[in-house]
Image (tube, rainbow over all chains, first blue to last red; front, side, top):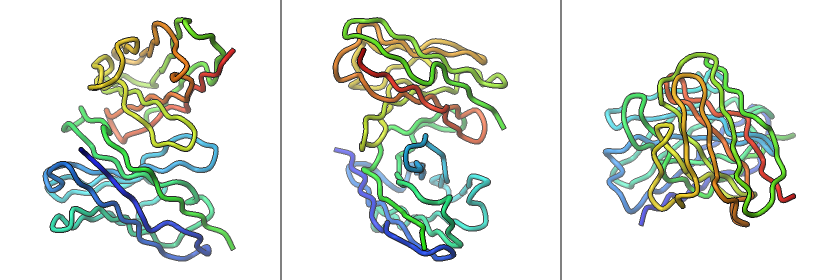
Length: 120
Length: 106
């Protein structure tokens, strides 16, 4: 059974840093693309970042230069390192297995989400 | 960036109704379009990928259609568990989601 379990969220002051983790199980983590998607309170879904199995990474313009994505395949864990946090980064962060390739892909499994709140 | 317009933003329907949600993109995306369902407090769930392919385990009352710039998600006979918010997503370029359609009980 595929499972994704996020952790690391919490209350942060503006300008702070935070690292989210997502532990994967039930599939071959190292060969799958993995993504982060977030959702501000009461709002829609926003793609944040993706890491391909070959190591390439991409980011939404809203987080470029502030967030990094990485993985530790020995621990089946995906990370999202967030810095220079602002109120606009508040929301639930989901990790998602990204199945497919090139432009033909979808998020077929999602974690339960971890809440990040940025407030003074 | 490709703009995505979902309509309606909300709708009220009864159990057994046929429901159709539309997603329109600002430029052609071939069939690189997915649909997700999200219930309050829960993670999204993939329903349809590639515009019309039903994800494993999803009931056959859900269907997707379209290509180019205009897409639809249909629910042939609305069930109590289908009351939720539905999102389209394009993966032709930088991935983006539509604004969502909330399906409520009439």
